[in-house]
Image (cartoon, rainbow, N blue to C red; front, side, top):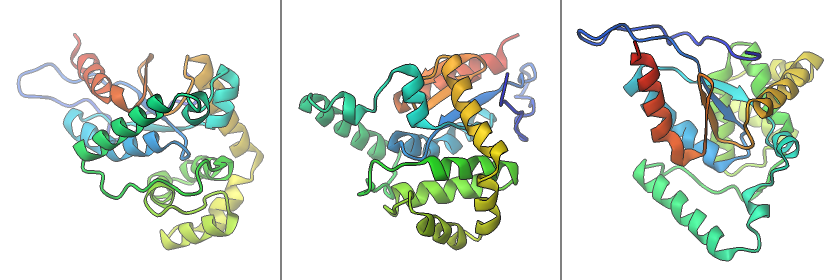
Length: 226
């Protein structure tokens, strides 16, 4: 499947007298512009710890995915339904409280054009510094409330994180990186995705932070299946 890699750490392991765990591929389709994707990002390490399964972070451009799937952002789709908006905020607060995500702050610059930083995520993965770069971008977006469409602000965030900002930003401008982000987005759409956060456990699609339990159960079922 295009764009899927096997992540180090997702090797089979034994659990007592049980059969060896099956290696499977699990993807997290993310765009830094989604606050719900940020919330998932903060919870995924706990799922990894419980299941022994690493998540492959798969960058997509959410605006492009919306266009391909004829979808719209919740803010736009439910603009005329105040009760739905209020309930979505309530559910977000419940999720934050349940998982003790006290650092979350809604970004005052929202919505943010994430094209620059999504290309940066692809570049970081190519330069083998994906995890610290992704952590830094998410923190800047949804903990520090910074304007991550601004090139100077992006450079400052990379520097503060101890990353090689000039190398990353140069890599992000390469045609291959731009093409990879576009191909990832197209691949996500062709496999049924329409938004972020989305997850693929093998070929099974799950959408939304409220499906994380289902994602974890699917991982466990597939890894222990005979």
